[in-house]
Length: 159
Image 1 (cartoon, rainbow, N blue to C red):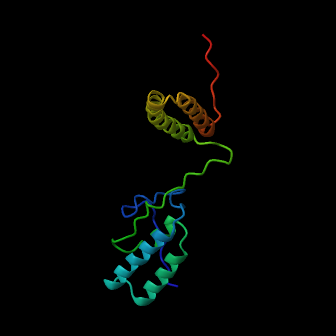
Image 2 (spheres, rainbow, N blue to C red):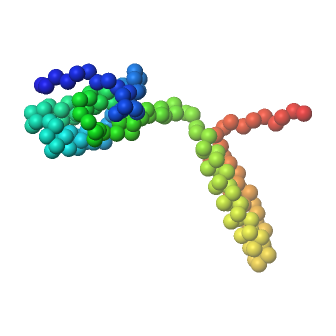
């Protein structure tokens, strides 16, 4: 294995890598593939010989963090892989917690239901005498509210 000096993360070539926690963010197949492609370019330009290229490609395949990839290009000019695409993943909500967007979706469904059912109920009542369509409309709103409710009802304010 050809030794490389330790990478200096957060330099002008890798402003997105950062230091500490930023440098330790894990990368994925996309970043590894981009590193392989950039190493191929450097091989083609004669900056790397075949043995050095092979060694660095192997290290790119085994890389786990931004810093691992940055170290492969420490002594090479651009092009270099874009590492800022490897970002922290936002943790998922724990089981049992309902997203607030669920009630927003319910509000939209209720608005569409209202926009369709009120004119339909009026039209059917006038033309066919089907006044019971208003009951269907009200029942539909209650079902939509029950299904999309996030359970966080506020008590009525006391004035």
